[in-house]
Length: 150
Image (cartoon, rainbow, N blue to C red; front, side, top):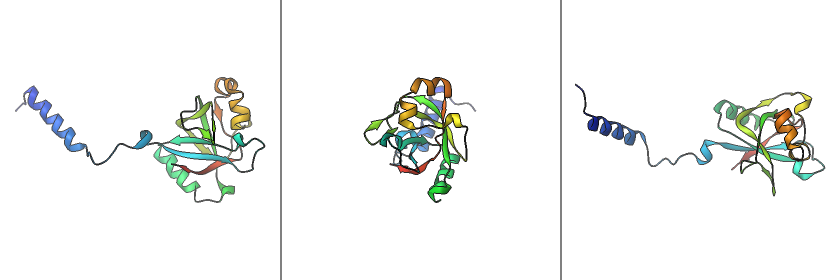
């Protein structure tokens, strides 16, 4: 038995309506969670003290949740692919960075190569073309996931 085209369309629309629960709003910000990454030792320039990253990767989110239970001295560093633009969320107080980590293209690491080490403002913001075009990644030593940003 085959259904007519209008009957097929109605069946698809009905199934879609049943699958959608209008009481559940879509996740905010595309389902991303945001985290402040901070320097363990206070820097000379306050703009180098923290920046914000975003992810919705479930495996990375589990790692981050575990990291947040550890003492600061035991937390891993971040290592991510750089993208131009602050993405509306990569800020430190009143300063919006000219770059951000590509969402879901960053990880937590124990160590990284020295070329990826630097400061968010004094190095990356000030020398953005070099970091975006040549280095392409940022893994600042001494920075850790401090907290989730709501």
